[in-house]
Length: 161
Image (cartoon, rainbow, N blue to C red; front, side):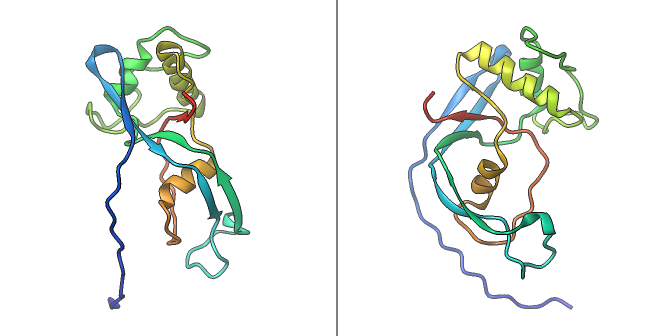
């Protein structure tokens, strides 16, 4: 049986900083600025469905960075896969469920790292995969609600770029 829960959502308007990175073939990658701050990483021992590896909670400070607004799409992956190889090969069509605007899937960590390396060489900016702390901080977005990460590829760019 469903239970009624009172939820308070605080909305506020604010300006966001972003840029669109141009990829080959007219494809773009939208990068959103995530301001740095200190947050409580991990989950409390009392959280429902908590895994032991999610604790203990501890304060973490992250510097500002840029994060892809959306998961890397198959069109973005294909555009970057066509760039010169840095370390490892990248399959241009790895996904089982096809669609230009669908998230890329069925790629290894090494291939995701190669995506970032090729993107870095192509743009002259330093791209990489987000750290665990950066990912949790961005996903929590200032909340303390339960957090369940998705497995997807997003790229980051330090603020200094």
